[in-house]
Image (cartoon, rainbow, N blue to C red; front, side, top):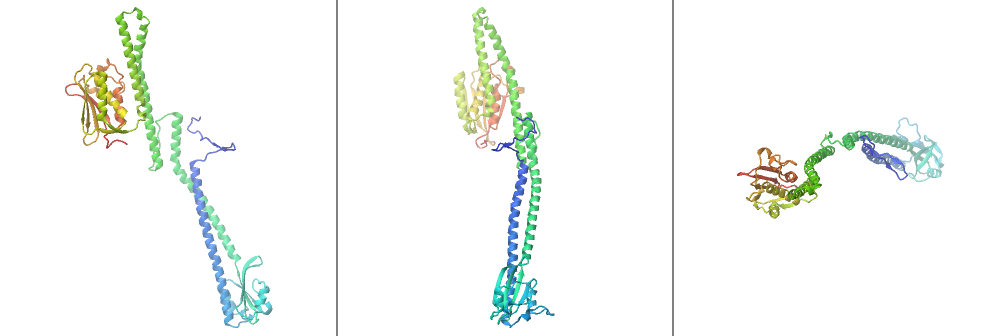
Length: 487
């Protein structure tokens, strides 16, 4: 198990047993960015090249077909002979010049029986069909061949009869140079696409580095926390995006973990301090048991009673500690709770246990949302605390449940006629294990009111304590009403 923040991420193992080095998120983003750019560039380049090549080829063929069409119309309209198409016209207005003016075409003139009168550049082949057209009686007949190889170049050749056996005119268009042009266009398109892919990869790496740099810092922080156990570390929380939100959530999580660890440490320290007293007393009384036969009967009864009382207090203390430690992890579902009914159940239970008179007074709707068992425990602790401090009292213990106007909260308070609370102790009685000087001789763990405060805080409220007019104390808590309760 690695303990350092710089520990490497464990490598995956392939089915063949080879270790696969994990790729970082930065590399994955860069590769993905480049792959998307490559796919889009390849698709656009292919479609662009295909469209351009198709247009060029169609345009070249259309120009050639137009030239052949004009030649056919010309020989049909005028009785032209081979000499009319021979090159050498000084005015450049001969029929031959008309053929070569619009496009780069090669013209070759044939006489009767296919004899070459004026060779083209390059010289065009004269096959059987060309010789037959040279002797044809009808002017304008044509024979076309789109795949003629001349000296390694590709030509399309059309032979048009002059009629009356006077010969024929061959017109050729070279399209291998067009294919060369398209090949060059293809090569440049591929080079451009490759340049775009490389640029996209570099830009993707730069962008991924900017995006993942904060994630890397968060990961290093998490590894530092895992290796050192320290929770008081600075967490990078810059930015308003998802990464910044993750940093803030991580910072809040560490803060809550730190508070939880501190609460546990303080609970253990306080519990250890509080457990020493009953354990010491138990140990002392147990040592007296070794010579119990030497003690008078009255002392024996007192010793046994002390042991029973101390064991009960120790049991109560342990139970309170367990409940306090597990209270924050309670899995009890949150439901609507009628605190008036809860107060009535607690009053019935305390009357049965202590014989004291407990009254309940309710004003308004007492419904809240919370965990029923926790809220009942909080109310029960308040009433039992009042009964403990007013042991010999005859006045009833009062539970008052009030709906607060405006805030929508519910106030639960327990009123007694005990010794009351000093002003300096009103804020301290909810601390763990704190016991007022007047209560140190009474049984109890000093955790009951601390649990009340924890329950109130867990339900979005607060605990309070004050003197009661005419003597006694008012201790209770406020929680949210059903409208404002957390769901």
